[in-house]
Amino acid sequence: MPEPYETLEWLALARGDIDRVAERRRDDAWLSEAWADPATRVLVVERGKALVQGDEKPRLLLLPPAAAPQGERYLLGVDDDGVAYFAVAAPLPVVEGARAAGLRHVGAVLDDRDSGLLTHAVALEHWHSTHRYCPSCGGPTELAAAGHVRVCPADGSEHFPRVDPAVIMLLRDERDRVLLARGPAWPENRRSILAGFVEPGESLEQAVAREVREEVGLPVRDVRYLGSQPWPLPRSLMVGFFARTDGDLPLRTDPEEILDAAWYTREELRAAVEAGEVLLPPPLSIAAQLIKRWYGGPLPGTSDF
Ligand SMILES: [Zn+2]
Image (cartoon, rainbow, N blue to C red):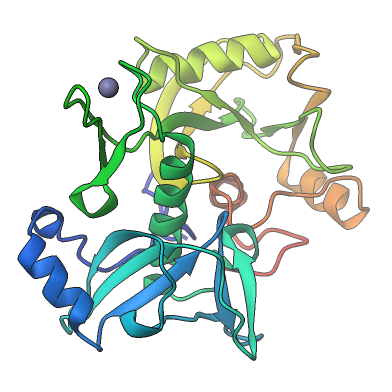
């Protein structure tokens, strides 16, 4: 196993491996040429879903441009072989043997390229669908920079895709127990680590300390960064940490955010999972990967990733 503070080696939605070629986004001649190339591949996205094929090892269904439906077009990047990838926001075509799937279902089992393409495409699609009007003047905006900017033709203002950073932190005490909590809207028995959105004018470390204080009333120290992954469900970036606290202090939970919270040793966690009293988060989440790092090996009750 890696050292406790080594950054996480595998995060389901942080595996994209193609070049995003940002320098091509405003190069209209290159974009036209890439779209005219039958080797180019297009991912159709509709409300966070795309078509996949295969049960055991699903892969994205990618179309040549000539077969793609009409819709807003986003340049996703170019792979090592020079193949360009676009996304098109449009109703998913009916293709025999293919089915619609979103990141929650296939984000962890797609290969690195496909996981990255889908993560990028659904993040852009959601942003475009919810940012059609100019925040300055209220007029309609237009897509620019191959889908990475929206421009207001009335006042010329440019608007960039929005990402909301959120901190997620695994709290440990001096006996190396982990604090797991249950949120109000979570599935029955789901337990996970604490998380919350970063506020304006706040550092990531300050957000960790504030959220822990608000949710369970504990002070934190020794905040260490472990990794991050995009979470475009719909538009977060999850930034993961380990932090220390004093496990003998009383927990004061905020009932709006936390139904209950408790400390677990590794043995207690294993027993609780095996008894069905605790359902850990899915491997797709950075929460599961942080808990796995603390646990020191594959988590009970989950398939090993
Ligand atoms: Zn405007």
